Length: 562
Image 1 (spheres, rainbow, N blue to C red):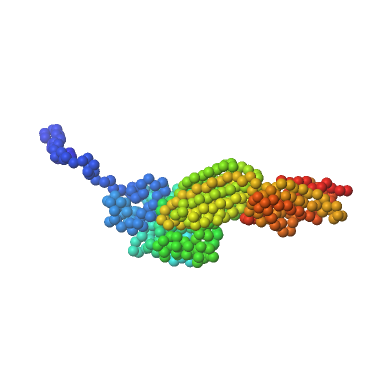
Image 2 (image 1 turned 90 degrees about the horizontal axis):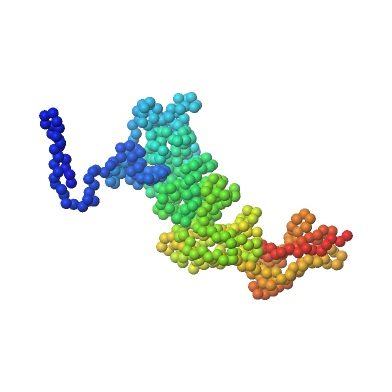
């Protein structure tokens, strides 16, 4: 260690007397030679609390609530950061605007003031546009949360506009007297950005004010959802968080990452669209009452619907997949704004696909696999096997060439296994949707799948014929024989007008299937509605146990008779 003793001036010159002594024999890493750097500005405080965070809002809000705005907790740098952000702002030449519920909005437009709010006043009423944006956001949040959802009024005492920088839109200071909402005085999007920030912070205060144990990550979800519900579409930051959530469904419905928490607004948006605002209200109330998230979400659904959490999560998984370029305009109204889903793996072409050990899926997590059959006949056989320590659920989402969707559940047994075969006729692609409903150890677990082509599923046709019945009725007798049949409940006879292309199923009810996997069967059906003056083509449809039709080749019927 080097110790500088002092300086001494002699005559007209200066001599620096340095005592190089006391060389302490200690490891270099035993102690820092200089005191720990402590933050001096709000920007420094944000960096100290949430180093490296691009969007510091969720992180800062969480840290302040964890610490409780108590500057006596943690290392010196964090204590200093908490003190800087937690103390009330003293504004030079302060002005006060009264918002909804007589809320005070404190700000300053003093020239040269560090916390100066942009004085732009488009309405000419001597109130800055940013301040009016904050007041409007608080009023809109109050309308949604207090009037529509009938949640308790939060103990918000004031809203304060100060300089926070680009990384932080605002935070909430808890105290014995209530909450102070601190917002950025110079938001990037001006009055519109201030309005959205006020909605988020007011919603955050509603959630945290409902219970001292309210989970921070779900407070962020409620804050993001409130802006989404009020505006009807997500802003850029919310779109980013929701898209991230879509890509990380395998992490479970209750991840600890603050950004994923904000992304859980996707779950609340699903609840609002699928079950109504009552389900959102029940969710907020139950999250404030119960310590564990899963029981809270389940109880909220049972209160507000006939579904439980597992049933709702099944539908949520489908909604979360139908986003981006897969949006179908029938589920989340803003789905096309989000990034397209990322698949755990994808495979194109049959007959042989083997996918082993996909990424692990957390409890109440979801994963999806994309399969492109590349075949027009036969069937797609999928074999699923999940780790036996988890409780699995899976289904196939068949996407037709027309864009139509059909969902086929897989019957997954207690051992975590399932097999299903579906016809590939008219199927453009198949999405295997996998969900881990629970695990005995609470940990993520893996699954594997095998998929291959079954060329003769669900039936193999030996003969098909259509001939006129010469009995004066003009009917057409359609006959066919099968070599083998699998998973069939019956057949349809489809007649197509050759000139117009119009198709119609001519049998009023399914013709029962009589064959087996290795048992041939013969069938005949009289089409009495055929017009003798027109030419028709006939084909057979086999209807599987899941109600899916698989079509045979076509055969021309008899020629028209004069």
